Amino acid sequence: MAIAVGVIETQTFPAVLAAADAMVKAGRVTLAKQDRSESGRQFVAVRGPIGEVKRAMEAGLIAANACPGYAEVTTHIIIPNPQDNIEAVLPIEFTPESEPFRV
Image (cartoon, rainbow, N blue to C red; front, side):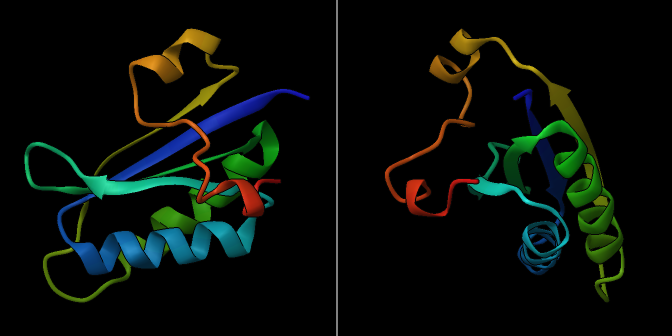
């Protein structure tokens, strides 16, 4: 099965929380990481089958942009079939905490 990674970065925590909630509800994806980037923005990463990640990302973008106040999405990306060694460098790996929820 082809696995993809989807990442949404927002200005505020409420927007990234809304995006994460919408993403896991809209598609059969695993929430792999939520953290603050070095610029102070918030990001959330999900992993799952390519079609499910695309569906989840669409829902996440809508939810994040619908948050009131200064909650714009600064950037987003979907990476289909990432190389195995990318997990050694980027924070997109499945963790022991996310393993029970892995799809």
